[in-house]
Length: 253
Image 1 (tube, rainbow, N blue to C red):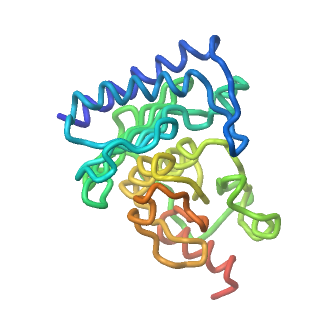
Image 2: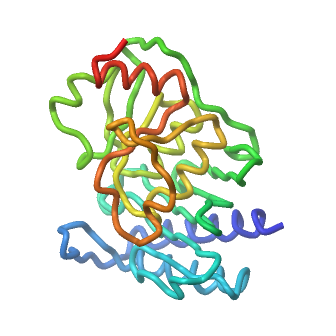
């Protein structure tokens, strides 16, 4: 099965990243974010081997961009999501690969190598962590210890002051979304591009979550297919949790 081959490949890519963690070169991109020789090596490894799985598919990767943009099927690759964490020895980073077909994410795999956590989902088939089915935690009530995760560039101080529980920034979109799907955190506020978000959002959807813009407007995957980053943050959470958060943010009852 394709999902089994993809899981094996993403784990191998994560193991490659770990081997390179003590021996990499570091550069700064034009947006002041880090990129390492490990990012590039892992993406190249994934592209080479994914091409063997689906020779007709295109690619959209963080480091090498689009290849065959107009292909019916597209691999979205983030070789090391959370590169700053990787650089500084913080274990919250991961490898993410999603397969997008006809404006729908069909498969998604995320591997967090240092934590040895392998997440995967197929559209309509549920979400899994190391072989066990996972579900997000849903409730309209919050405790002071409940966690909402956010991207540092997606929220303001005013917004954080309105959020329930304890806001946290993990520095990795794939960690944030995988942990939302697993019920470790109640929801996630995100910005990013297709390769940052596709696999994690599929995991969350299969674990019982919805995704909407913070304004409340509907979000669709095709909003990311041009390759551009989201212009407005999105909230991913299960239904009752999402309604409760929107009630707080928009002062509705």
